[in-house]
Length: 119
Image (cartoon, rainbow, N blue to C red):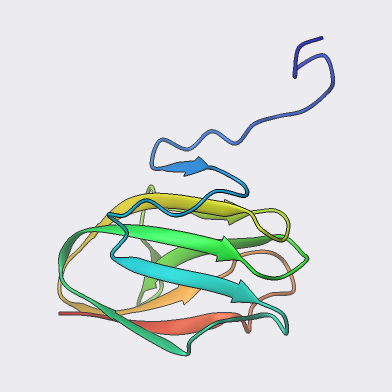
């Protein structure tokens, strides 16, 4: 029976790939964990400017997303999703030097944010 027949939809995002219960690629330059209490594992992160490989790990039991925002604008084409504990997603985003915010966009998770400094 196909996944479509079972009503299972796989996420389609050219910049990310879900790989539950696996490890992050060695090339990850920014590792972020979603933890219980609707927060990330850190309140601030720092990376170098350019093409950044981001790894997102769900250490919580509920669904989370990860987007990058500068000012009031979401960085286009980048969103990571983890649906359950142990899920891992990774993708790349190109960022210029500056200050950004990492956010979870799941409704009710608006307080789940962290500062991202890109140097």
